[in-house]
View 1 (cartoon, rainbow, N blue to C red):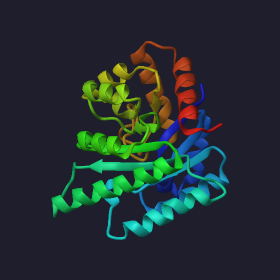
View 2: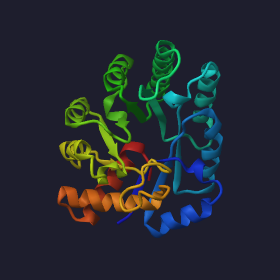
View 3: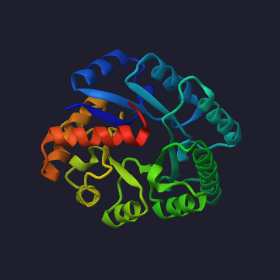
View 4: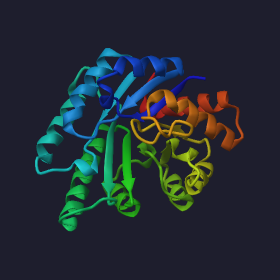
Length: 259
């Protein structure tokens, strides 16, 4: 019944980190992948991964965190692959067109360039890639195709698109990871996408501290709540919860190359 939270942001829990870890342990969360979104959080999650064997980490510049010092940050990102404990993936990286303000053309241009550069690093390192795509799938897909990156190494995290998109991802060899959004009443399209992907390559995540699943929507999300999402998905797919947990855990270990 063990689970792996394949995408969380543990740097948000500085004040009560011990409590969060204890609750995760009680919920049989075997491992957590704390994902980087900007240079400011990479050092902390690297330290956490060194202190706690159940924590793994990634490095990446989130599309909403782009700025003029991005070249310096890319140099820092690459340096983590020379440390004693290297990232299990590059991410989360990608494009986000949902809340564009100001000089939209320049922001999109910068997002695309930083995305391309990080894909280039990921291709050189031959590591998994965690994609953030919000209202931008076609552009994400085009840039990934141009990069020459292997779709088998790509997961679109917090999948929020429909069935046609997941089919497009799957036919290329990629996969999606699903959050507590699947438990929401108005998420029929995401449930349809989950069923279209099936258990082949399926991974699940919290994306905490966001997107708490039912029945915890009024609370800040945390890794322990992954159990509720797993239970819901098992029921949706007509599987025993134990089987769903075993499959998603195995998928995560294979994808991120973790023991």
